[in-house]
Length: 318
Image 1 (cartoon, rainbow, N blue to C red):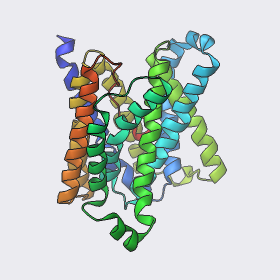
Image 2 (cartoon, one colour; image 1 turned 90 degrees about the horizontal axis):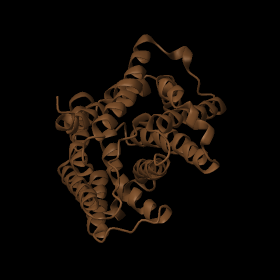
Image 3 (cartoon, one colour; image 1 turned 180 degrees about the vertical axis):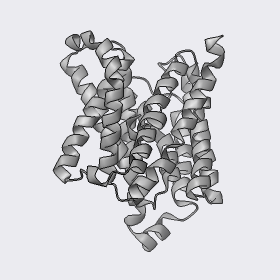
Image 4 (cartoon, rainbow, N blue to C red; image 1 turned 30 degrees about the vertical axis):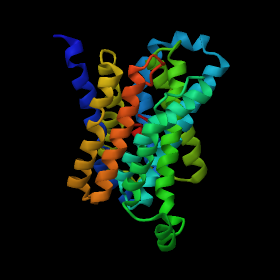
């Protein structure tokens, strides 16, 4: 079998798996589990699942520099753990609207490119703002429809901005993780970087949940455990595993197009199972946002500049 021929479809399959997160996550939160505790369980399960890869590449740990340890800690504690908390909390604040929260994550490449310019000294793509401005307009429409900013403020004040702001902050943290991860994987194995990401994320959330008193093991039912395991392994660890497997033999430009299956499938899944529908202006905004970001990534991939790797959603630290 020609592996390269089927690799783009493997990337597409991983994007469909990511889209299945919300229908399993919402019952946990509505059922009384806290956002931090669910994220803690996910990172615990994914840390255990990552152990074989960590053991396999454990010799590399001896040569990790202080700068690399700092990068690994950032990816785990901030990009994975804190980013997951902010993303889910954003959806909760917006009345469990995981669709809008996820669509706002498509701003991530804009942040990642900007951070790469600042920290990796890459040159800003000549057409960056040509695509960035429409993407930001699309993000606004996705979030607020065609409502004017002053009307939103008069009707809801700062409360109308809390959910979107958390989602955008999560995208910024994940973008930082993309930049740090790309730097780390120049010298370190992917399995080691990804495994330490989950381990540091687990340790961060362990401290966070312990300090906040959010341990809820007594509330865990068989149904809750099933959903957590599905989220952690199927839409999380396994989806990421096959994503990178497919990415090895897929051009960045092609992978970017295949990843569009994620927001499209997510919108349909959340509409079908959670009853989350988008207004006409939100649909228009989603199309503008996705088209602008895709065009930006494709243009970057075609240029002679170092290209931005396709970005995997970070549901639960994926």
